[in-house]
Length: 136
Image (cartoon, rainbow, N blue to C red; front, side, top):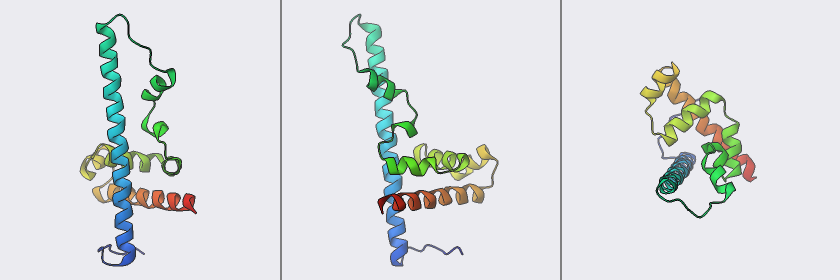
């Protein structure tokens, strides 16, 4: 049964802290990814200006082109994200990485506002369970 999380009980406090941790981890990964893209674009613009440029490693160049899921270093988080359905993963990543509102996601997916919110929070719960299961 669904219960309101008012943040006063011990389990609610821990749940809120973990949700904040998860959101922060995803946002930091997003920022790292954006910085990598910026570096790549700077390197590409420099190659147009100069005829010679020291070579970058092939592995590093290949890493820049990979989607976010393939760049994740935290294997537990990666496994948890792969365990989500396509819709759950889309809503979670769009909300966490791009900061889209539930209204925008509702328009994109054809769900109601509360439907998108439910999918998002269900995805967070699944990620938490998967990560906790990997730690044990």
